Image 1 (cartoon, rainbow, N blue to C red):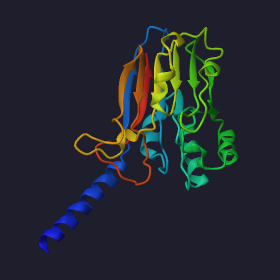
Image 2: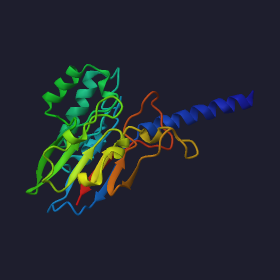
Image 3: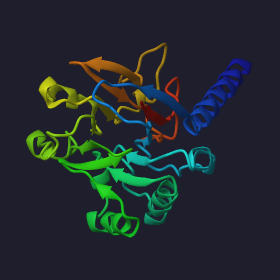
Image 4: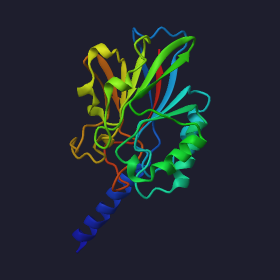
Length: 250
């Protein structure tokens, strides 16, 4: 009987630990330098992906406010059942940091698109769906490119890169990290931001359904894959801590 009790207590403690880990508020700092970037001042980006059901914590907003030029949401802002009020609160808080740009994730289509677009219009969120914007920073132009989700949308690389030929630094955002298979060196992309995998969310002895988040190089391009901020299915994590990212492009 005592062994059963000990097992129950151990299981409860592990679940509590996993719940606490899933609700951490981590901001990881990254500094990148690229030969295509001739900026006098660094580009300061706050990148967050896979928010799902979470509320962006006030501690993150307080830490990042006045330190960010652009906010990028890398998809899965939500999932089915998330109240519109919570979605709008997250957008409102992220908008306090800087101009918000959004790419679609596989879960973002689980609510009425018109409801989401109403929120985006209210807070001037720019949706990048196989499209690019040319931004001016320190009197230098650079391209922010976003593609549709690989699983639930239709990726059109040619359309996404229209009008970007004359820009030096190019940053591409794709919710699904497998986008690298479709990108060629001659597109001139320096940095790719992705999420989707949650770092496996629950990793046991180093193993999980997906790789842990990482920064690596593919075909001469740097890709940052985020563990993401929220969770799916269960609000639990193990050895795959949630994260957001403060990125300096120097």
